[in-house]
Amino acid sequence: MAQQQQISLPAKLINGGIAGMVGVTCVFPIDLAKTRLQNQRSGQQLYKNMMDCLIKTVKSEGYFGMYRGAAVNLTLVTPEKAIKLAANDFFRHQLSKDGGKLTVLKEMLAGCCAGMCQVTVTTPMEMLKIQMQDAGRLAAQQRVMPSVVTALKMGGTSAVLSLSATQITRELLRTKGVTGLYRGLGATLMRDIPFSVVYFPLFAHLHQLGQHSREDPSVPFYWSFLSGCGAGCIAAVAVSPCDVVKTRLQSLKKGANEETYNGVVDCIRKILTKEGPGAFLKGASCRALVIAPLFGIAQVMYFVGVGEFLKRNHTTDT
Image (cartoon, rainbow, N blue to C red):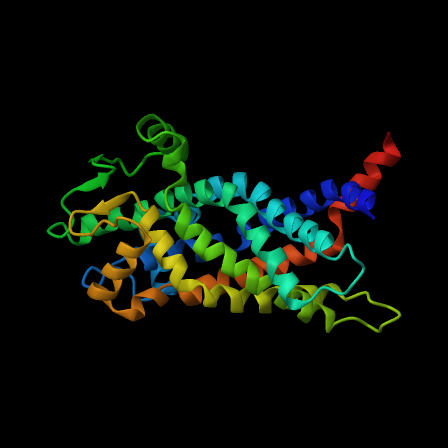
């Protein structure tokens, strides 16, 4: 069994990578709207809701403005999703070695371990993506409310909105070192571990409901999609407050009147004091709309077995 796990691991990594790329391509504009809605402060609101944000983005930045930062995501989502899905399978396998059925507690532990593994890629990916996504909001704020936004700050220095992800990475490495790319690591762990703890056991149980029979445990692909969507939506909304905190902490560029935060606790306290509890649910509906199809598509690709097909063909050719 251990040998089989090792053999199938490369295929699982391929599945996770392809699934992540397909999913991100489909839902990235909604993710951009989520980031901008989460970052706007009370009294400085440019966008009323998701649709208003997308319409204004297209008008001011063009169609491809909705995909600002997508290159970063498409580059790093392959290892991120691959690590997440493969790690969950690996830990589930390790926890069920005794031949017994996985308990809910063990499923949650496997999800927790998967969440901890993925942040090695998730944190720098989100860090760079957020700078790119939020740049358009700050530029629009300067045009619409010049009296409110008079300067932009990036780690105490002036920031240019047109910086590419590569330039941002070089600047962070030069000024902060590798740790600069891992700003908000604590908040990312605070979001991704609970997400995985909720998502993976919930998906496993929803997916099991679609089995044809005890003798035939196969599940139709559409049920994998629906299970991924349902579990992803519930998990995404559950950890939405943590996502707001993470987005605020990782945003380097801020308007002159936008507060800065010294860690997770300080961020939570300032949001509660200045914006109220409702601010922790900013972009929650957008996040649900992003995560639900993203994980639905991911699970379909995963269970269809694209990686296994490619690996089998490669073995046949050689």
